[in-house]
Figure 1: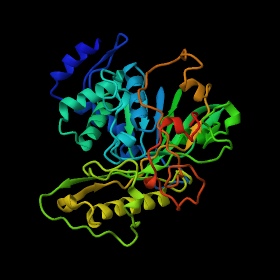
Figure 2: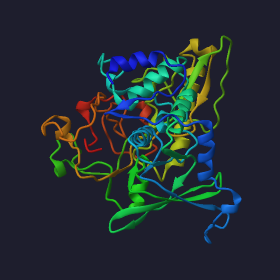
Figure 3: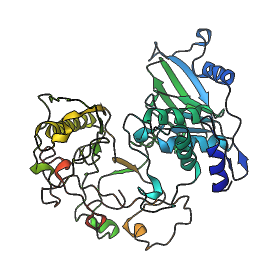
Length: 417
């Protein structure tokens, strides 16, 4: 379908789901209420069919079989599941939380920007499913509510009769044979079910590479030394530093005085700390409040969550109570994230490792390319001094919020990260 025809179609929609023809294959008709009700019998069988394992006597055992298992319900996982289902595959999609979308969901609120890069490249679009989802969102969610974006993704997945969706379900192992994954056990403690999913193809879209870890795949963590791939922007010595995590807040003007008193554990934030950062706009928080890149962003997630909340509340305390921003008097936070938006941790080693040379175009166009990305190299040195220079300091000594913005030309992270 041509993009112009697709836009015309999207403009006349009254519901969420769009049926798109891709390479001559059309999506199956959306699931009916009756079909969905029947599908729930599969993931939550009647009591007469209950089976249990001795090690988990209180969890109902359910065996599922499919063509493709997708682990992780972020944007990568949702797109993979929908694409596979529309091409005729039977799919099981595992998501460890109650909402789809990952960092793009209402739990984190990282909006999808894509190839247009905030309008810096007019006319550039993602194409494919991301384009479909964003156009649907523009038509049916003009208020730009993240919760309705969550609903759109839920509807997209539920409307595919070939997808079995398991929310609040965590994979915890992988059964392998001759170097191949054969079955994945996963558990949903909210519904007290234990699933064993057999598939022919397994896709790890978890973000933390959990499926790869359980299957024994080779992984990396951190930054490679300059010598390994002859990358000029890589550090001289490799280390385990990564990009940090962020917690966002949103705020609005209530038209009346709105006092704010921070908790005692909030970090004190001064004007000097923010000299490289603008704090004059409050509606959509700040992604530059980032912390934890010198820690383990998986193992230390609870500490990172606490520190990020302490920093966010300290920044808001400065905005409200320093006296430097009197126009903030009628503003108040109306949401603060509880889930750190992760950027980087474990990386799976595949058949090809992208390096700085690929990003600089020295190796030519990849023969198996499937998409064009428009976002610039977004480098976040995990530790910087107030002068903006990278340094190796104690993890708690220098939160990233005091850093100056860094350009790709000052990259401190290997391109393979």
